[in-house]
Image (tube, helix red, strand yellow):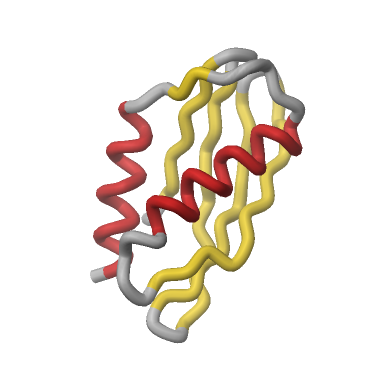
Length: 94
């Protein structure tokens, strides 16, 4: 059930763009981790353990989200696009 909630949240977050000042990769990672943590906090039994992200090329970044869900650890890929002023992220649950 928690995976379905995370999937739903990731679909919603994919539709939204967030405005921000130009960020370093670390600054962007921190912003996204805070957003994911806030969203996940609304799901009972799910806690963000870690979020790491690297710049791949151009506007594209790849991340790894580690969560604890009802006592089990799960790892998800996260795709991030950032153009220097707006970003969007998506948790891949499949």
